[in-house]
Length: 156
Image (tube, rainbow, N blue to C red; front, side, top):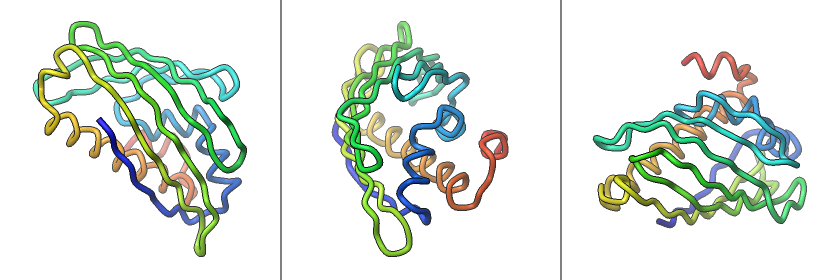
């Protein structure tokens, strides 16, 4: 599965970069994230509960940052395992560019799924992935642009 896109965040690049590297912010923004620990230098560990079509699973995974060029870009690489539900692994190139009105965050994702998830078909999996990305950016914007705390966003 491949996906790309961009969003303009009404904040300066340093602020966006700081939030993209904050475990607290990321935990609040990732739908279904129950736990997220770690640091950008050592990597992050996460527990995420999700329902993809008829498949419910708790995914445990790890994410590391590569090719870090602060505050402009990095590659995020990770893998999550959801038991019999299957697995997801892949990466995303993330680039931050200063634009009028804020910072443009561009991403290019390449991911693979296996197990029961792969059996659902690309239409369901791609639709789910797009929904997750939209939800992430909606929450991210509330924290970065509106100044909401991660606790306020998680509760919604």
